[in-house]
Image 1 (cartoon, rainbow, N blue to C red):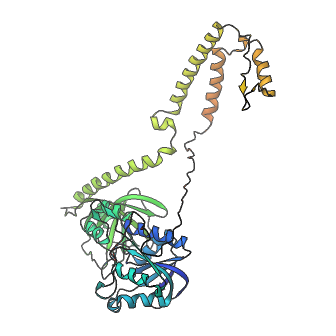
Image 2 (cartoon, rainbow, N blue to C red; image 1 turned 180 degrees about the vertical axis):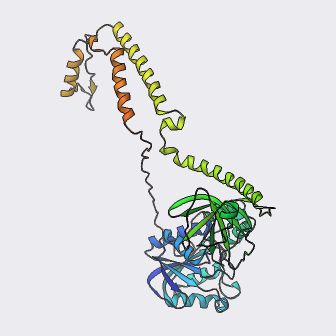
Image 3 (tube, helix red, strand yellow; image 1 turned 60 degrees about the vertical axis):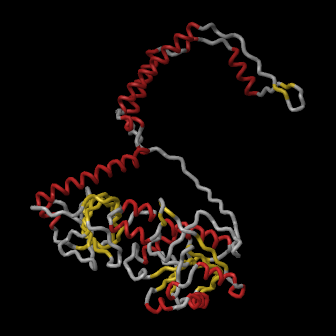
Length: 448
C-alpha cells in the first residue's frame, strides 16, 4: 500500500527520487515518464515518489485521487506527495517550493516532463530545476523527459478532455492507455426503465469532480458481482440531471438483480447516438432495442474471439464430434487397405544395412555400435511375416469399439496454452550531470 504524505507536513526519511507533475489524467505520456523513473530509482537505490494534486488544477479530473493512487502501484511507487492546489500553493516561489520539499523529504533526485511548470506565475521550468541540480551545494540531480506524441499532437490531459467533450471516447482511450471510466454507487431510481419501458437500469451516482463526457448514449462495459456485462448508458438524459450530482443510467444485457449501495465501475467503449425525445414509451423501447442490438452484436464478436482458444477443432469448423469421427474412420479404413496391398506386393527383405562408419576428430574411422543397435539389427534381419498385418474387418471392429468408448466420454473443450514468460533486462545507468544522455522515447506533461 502506498504511503500518502501531505505536502509541507509529512516526512519521508529514506533517500528518494520524486517525480514532479499534476498527473490528473495518468495517460500514456505519464506512463513513459513513470517507467523511466522506476528504472532510475531502482538502479540508484532510491525509493520512488510521485507528486499528485488532490483536486486537480481547479477543474474536474479525469480520475479521482484514489483512482490515480491505485494506478501508480504498478510502477513500484513507494509514496505519493499529496498537494492541495489552493491559493497559498499558487503563490509559492519556485525555489521556496523546492526548499519545502527537501525540508521534509530525503530527496536525492527529481524527474519531470520537459515542459513542467511550477511556482508562482509558472516561473519555475525544467531549466530552473537543471540549474538548481547543477549547483553542487544542493546535492541532487535532475532528469527531464520530452513529450510523447500521438499522431502529430502532444499527448496531454487537456487534449483528452477535449475528446471527451466531443464524445470521442475511443480516441481518448488510446491516449489514456485504458478506457475512460466512472466509478460510483448504485442507487434507487424511479424504476421507469423496468416498469414502463421494459429495460431495468442501474442508476450509478459518481463524484461531482469527475470530468464529464458529452451527453449521449454510449456502449459500455461494467462488472457487477464479479461478472462482466456489456450494455448501454445514458449520460445526461435524466430530466433532473445535475452536473454537481451526476447519475449514469446503465442497462446491461442479460443482467438481473439488485445491487443497491454497491460500487461499480462503468467503462465507456464507444459513442452510439445523441439523446433524443420520443413521443411515447413504445418508441423509446424500440430505439433502445436497436441500441442494444448494436452493442450485443459487437460483444458477441469480442466473446467469440476470447473463447476461440477454448473450443475444439470440431466446434471451430462447425462440424459435430460425430461427423469428425465418421470422417476419421473412413480415412483410417482406406489407409489400412492401401498399406495392406502395398505390403502384400513387396518382397520380404532378408538383408540388413550395416551401421554407417563415422570419422572421429582424430581422422580414424570408427564404428559405433551399442547394445540397442545390435538388438535393432537382430530384429530387422528376421523375416517379415505378412500374416500379422491386420485385415480391414479387424480395423473396423477396433474403430467401432473406440467409437463406443469416445461416445461415453465427455468432449474436452479446453486447451492448455503454453505459458508465456517475459524477461525484462534493465541496463544500469547513473544520471548525475547534464551530459547524461536522455532516455528515448521521452514523455512529459505541462502539469497535466
